[in-house]
Length: 250
Image 1 (cartoon, rainbow, N blue to C red):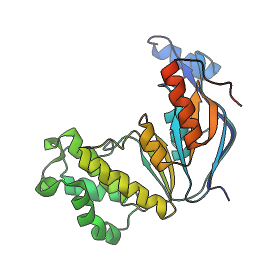
Image 2: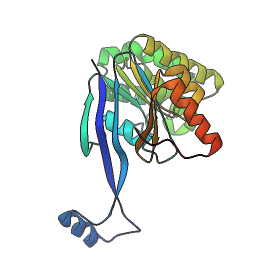
Image 3: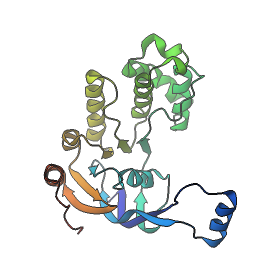
C-alpha cells in the first residue's frame, strides 16, 4: 500500500508584476483575480511504499521544492488527489526554526519539541545529537556565535534523530565538510534500511543514484520522465550535456 501517492496533482500560484498598493491587494482579494497564474506543478503522479525512495531532479524553477512542500503539508494542491501517511520529517531549510539568542542546547530541545519528541525522548537523544553534530563545547554557547555550517550541522543532527517514517531532503546532503557529509549519507542510508521513505531533491546525481530506486524529472512543473532512478538520471544527464529539449511528458 502506498504511503505517499500523487494522482494528477497540480499546484498554481499567482505571480504579480512589481509592487502593489494595499488597495490593489484588497481589490485582488475580492475579485479573486489580479495576477498571472503560474503552474508550479501540472498533473504529477507517483507512488511510494514503505522503504522506497524517490529522487527529484530538474532545472531551477521546475517545481521540485513545490513538490516537497506539498508532501510536507506546507501548501495544498489545487487539483488531483494526494495521500501522505506516516510520521514525516522535512529537511528543507535547516536551522530556520532556531533562535540566535538561545544556546545550541536550548535550540536542540526546542527543535526536538517541535519535531514531536517527548521530554524523556529528547533527554535520551540529546547527547547522541550533540555527538553526531560535532559541535562539542560550543553546544552551550549562543547560536549567534555559530557559523552557518555549525547551525546546519546541529539542525541536521536534531532532525535525523527523529525516527521519521517519511524523510524529505532538499539539497542538504552537502552539509559540513567531507567527513560530515559521509556521516550524513550513511545515516540516511541506515534510515532507508529500516524502512523510511525518502524523497530527495538534489543536483548531486551520484548521491541520488546511491539513495534512490526511483526518480522523477520535472520540467516546467510536468513529469518529463518517471521510473527507475538509473534510467531517469541517465536521461537527465544526457539532457544537461546535450542542452536538448526534454522528452514530452507521458
